Image 1: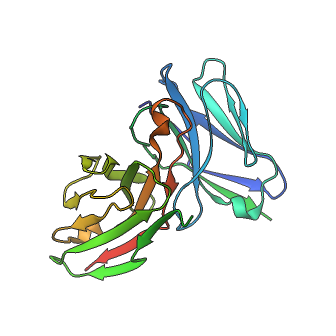
Image 2: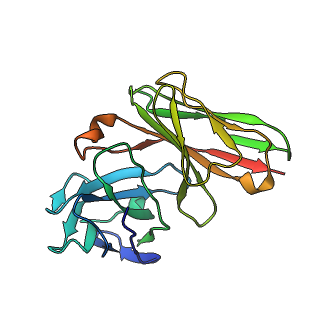
Image 3: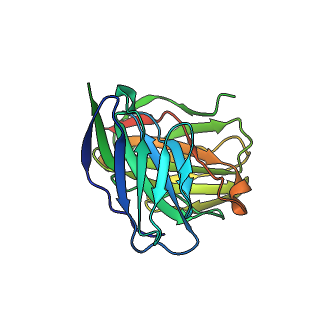
Length: 111
Length: 117
C-alpha cells in the first residue's frame, strides 16, 4: 500500500472549517483513500473514503486532486468533539487486506 | 448490536505471565484483526483472520498467538508477557463484502490497556 504524509498537528477555531491535508504521491490506480479518526483513548472511527471523485457524507467531505497524489479532509464546522488524531490511509479497496495507520494529524479545535 | 467488544478494559501482568485478551463482534463479520498502539504512535497490526479457522500474521506478530474457532470471537494470547508488550490493544472487524467493493469500513473495539511489570 502507498505511504501517506500528514502534518503532525493542526489547530482550528470552533465553528470554522478544518482542512486536513494528506500527501500520497505514490498511490496506484486501484488504491482508495480512507480517513479514520481516533478520539482520545478510543478505538479509531471510520470517516470517509474515495477513489478519485470528491465524496461527502454526514461527517465530512473528501477532496482528491485530479492526479490523486494528495487529498484533503474537510470538517465543515469543527466542534470541540472533533479534537482527535486523523489518519489518512491508502490501500487497495477490495480484498482481505489491512489498514496501515501512520502517526496521523492531531487536530485541536480551539474554543 | 453491541458492535465490537473487548475484555478486560485494563490489565496488569508480571513479566512471564500469560493471558488472553478477548474480542467479540455481533455483526457477522468475516474479517477480524488485532492492533497494538504504543504512546505517540499509530496502530500496528499484530494478527488478522479472514474467517473461522483462518489466521495470518501482521506487522508485529512475535509473542502473540491467535485462533478463530467461531465467526464471533477472535482472542489474542500473550504467551509470556514482556514489558515491551505494554500497550493499548484494539480489536477490529469488517465484512468481506469489501472483496468486491470499496465499502469496507472497519469497526474498532474500545481497547484493552495492558501494563507488563
